[in-house]
Length: 291
Length: 63
Image: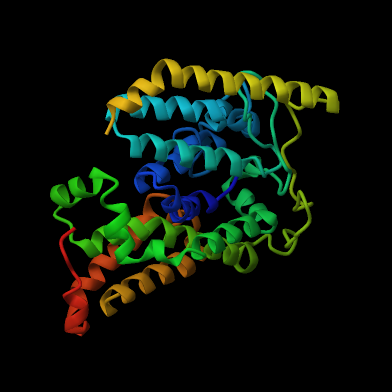
């Protein structure tokens, strides 16, 4: 799984959306980026109370990314369905499109770890992964943090930080006034409800960037300087590393290339057809009715 | 950006990076982390407002 990348994706997307002249809500992109993990993450690490660990999945990698489990939250079609539900409920295009963009960004970026995501669920349960770093949630929150920030996972987060910083104008007051606020009625509501000044609202807007960026350095410093296991849990920038972690076993994968391409073609066709039908039968009508 | 606002962000960065290295997920979680940023900025703009140049404070416009 990606750690800080999900908080930083939203700013990168925001920077590149202006050229398409589409109204998108920043808050919806952020929510979409967090959505697949929002209600599913607790059993991955479990709830630690003293020496006891409660509500922990026996095989977190299967629970989090597989089927049966909550793996479908990391699929393309799930995000489309949530976006349509938002469109039906809020009747707001900027929110529906934001959820769609943020959710897809999450699903695609998580496909870089060694377990990957079921992109084309329910047409295939095959997991898609580049195997860039080891999925290690079974090692607990701190074991996973150490593995992630000792491997290409940390580099991946830093890459997203650089992408977000590549468009500095998204962090300016002018951009907030001209692009963020007009696209989303939630800001006017927030201002009225909590009597917030502009500086406080901009702080809310920038908060996930500052948090995401600092999270990379905070965890990296912990893994390298404070972690009591740092002597054995060393930095390992090799593909699929770190080698020292007991990474999640491979599952839900085709054993041959023919099987892989067959399932991919079926999954891709199924998801494309379903999305087209959803658009023709429901989405188009809701879109024209929405603001 | 007003000086008081800059101080707020700087304090937030220090808390999250240095505090995060020691306290880990107690502060580095998706609720506390952003709340620290917002809290630091609001608090510092109130505390250090007097150090801001008049031009910068007039930047505060209704949205």
